[in-house]
Amino acid sequence: MLFLLNVLAVSMLSRLYVNKQMLILKKCLKQSVQIIELVHIF
Image 1 (tube, rainbow, N blue to C red):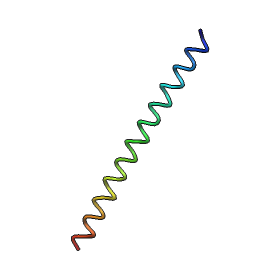
Image 2 (cartoon, rainbow, N blue to C red):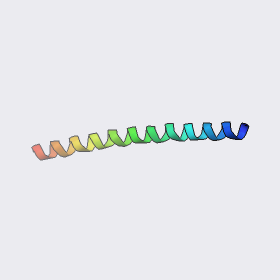
Image 3 (cartoon, one colour):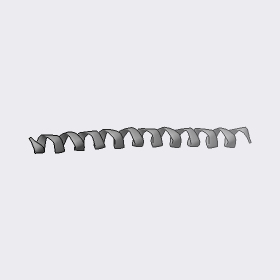
């Protein structure tokens, strides 16, 4: 029983971690796209 709970907890934590990483990646992508657009303007 404890083993199952541990597996669930670990999978939930890893999912949260992955979601956070994806959000950070999306932010970085947005910023780089904005920078590229600014460069194209000049």
